[in-house]
Length: 139
Length: 455
Image 1 (spheres, rainbow over the protein chains, first blue to last red):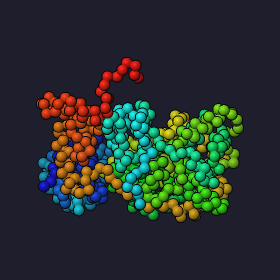
Image 2 (cartoon, helix red, strand yellow):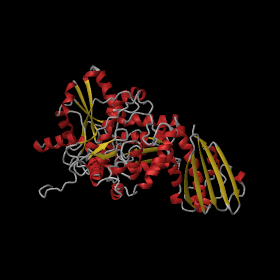
Image 3 (cartoon, rainbow over the protein chains, first blue to last red):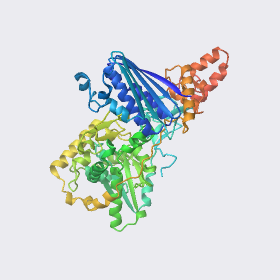
Image 4 (tube, each protein chain N blue to C red):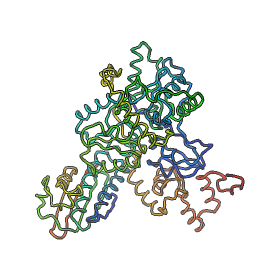
């Protein structure tokens, strides 16, 4: 058994970036999850959410909470990532100057998600979109 | 050990409360419900910020204070004044007058709390260097904020600087000084004049300390009235500022916004007013804000000048305090060696740490996660039938709060007036039953027509 939640992420709207991860945070707090695990999870989701806002046209965050883990799938429609290995390097960024000006796009996104999750899978198709799966164990 | 039951200075006076929804709607931790026509505060959720007191249209919420005559059970009676007190009085009242009236009330010593600020800034710098991995640091200054973090942001508890606030350092200092003069511990009574409710709660149920260093608390508006009354009755004048005192700009500005944040190196932010603080803490928790070194967070608008027990307009009070700081800065430059506190610096620095601050989240639905998940599913189902307009007519601040109360067995779904209408229409409850439910929330006879002579 598990609980499912879906949040829509709007591409290009930075004023809304973070709403989905904040909602997940509220839920995890209500479920009495260890604050340290909540923090890791929320930080990884926030990074993933900002990635969709910064690079894609639109996306979804599907959250499934099980008694032992939280599984989050973030899927977007967008340009895709040409070289995932490159994107995983700290400091690598394809963000436009406008995005950087807003304080995003320092090239920390994917590495930071990896750091703050127990399992991370990513796949991407150029000009179609990116699927990211983040798993964090709750115990 | 922290007590299981938390002391709160904010009390609802049953005889005065009219059972409206003002306090319930402004409470930042959703701690208030209306039952039987009265506001009821949930002690586990209340952080003593005082928003409810400010919102109450009939002054039914008060700050409970100790009986003043208790000061006389001590031989040595120390009054610790917050600097904001000095900003409450009109310009023609001198500091000497204020001090002497307070002394006449029965105190043997009158000091200002913020005189020991320099000790704390030194300790804070050392602490921040030593624990650099716990950045960003959150000041332990405001007890309402410390409690807010405990109940709503448990993951951030470790960022709170585990050092005593200035009020406790001063209490420690003056107690030690009097002991060195030959008085025993139980002969010394230290009383704090408070501009807010949170400081009282901090004295009565301290966080991170076994016991408080303060023996009692006196509300600032009480002292304000005593001083004004005495001065109106026998008007003496003198020079505005004290000549035998040293108050640094840092001390006088400490409890005002940016008083702390301006003292440290790095990126320091000063945020006042509890909703602003909540917004920043949310972002901090998501790591949307990074690269901040120090956060000064205060529950009241314009910090302590906006405390619920202040009487003067906060902007005028701040202006006076700034003038006061400038005067001391110009005319009485601080000579550190002359300050008595310097002799106690080592002693105070050695006793400045506090113990663990425990998180005590009010958000979790159940300690057991499986149970919590079941409850959350129930809440989501209930929310689908509630109207979602947050009218408050059920006695809870929002539909979400009612749904949570129902699941926790603290309320019934039929308290919702929308559901009552539907149930009555479908013949599932009688109009009388519906009426009785509403009387349970809003009080017996609440719905009776008011007489024209009533106000």
